[in-house]
Image (tube, rainbow, N blue to C red; front, top):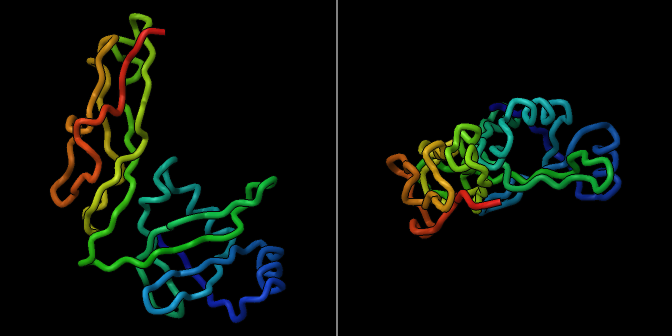
Length: 184
């Protein structure tokens, strides 16, 4: 995904208010050398949110375009307004191709309606929604998928049952249970 960002000149509250009142969103690109104050057009960020599958914003690599320079980054945090839930601030983390990063990757359960234990009156309970992994930018998986169709009541899946692609190292304990089917 591509996103055009623009430089902010000052760190005054009045400038931030002016940016937000125009429908844009203040942002910061955090770098080891110097943090860059930026802003993003609100409509561009809304389009990015619409095109990003639910739960995958934190793993979405964004190409930030600033004055012709393109920087790969991750959205580290989005701050939302308390009542309107409009984005108020975005933190970007720059990425280097050869530097490993630590991320929380979503775990998605598939075939819940076909789950044997659920059909027999059990209840599927997902204990972990994300798994912490370490990988290079090129190896970032969108999500981990787990087929829960064969699970009976009293059974579950552990992290070791997930398929981790080459170059992706899980940082969680592989014996940890992430989904189970229990009695109602």
